[in-house]
Image 1: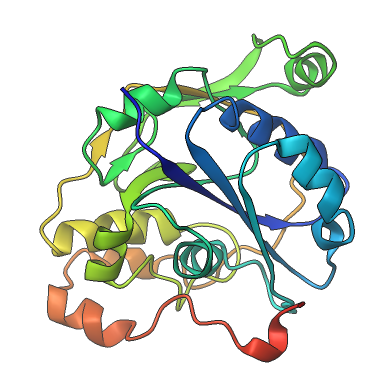
Image 2: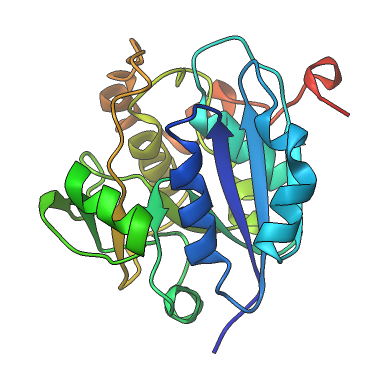
Length: 252
């Protein structure tokens, strides 16, 4: 059993990030029915400048948007942009660009009711294990740690969602989430405020090691503790618009 899915990946170029993105997409593109949607943010346009090579390499429907930004990475906003501007299927996988998916991920997602964390365990590979994988595509340890989904803990990485749900709740919370941490927890809380139960797909993901490239820690990340008490009406007032793109920021 499988269903067509749109895979939305935010990406901000750095030479150390590119190999992780390529192997992440390679693991995802094994799926028979998928389109790969990449939202590239930041001040450079690396994928745009190599777009034909990307299309030939992915060999799947490939949708791409370059939005020039000059602020700390806003991952939630990039996800929202991808859903609104690129995704054409109802079912959407929101995923980071440093995760490796098993071959049967799509069939498991098809049996999982959204919204859900698209994993029930993430194994964080060591630097040595990642270097070995990039050479041989052999998954294995040593692992730095493993995590399971928790609303106020490790809530992120990959989310299984639908466009209907995204429209109903008004997207991921993006307003106060520039830099690292908090947006996944806020999204989980928001989904519950709108009456959804967040499930977890029976999938183990591997997280590829990378240096701490993004150093800007979101100074407003602790707002998630206040959000635990927010009713649906406050969420609607807090973020009236989501996934908005100024046309002057686009590379056409």
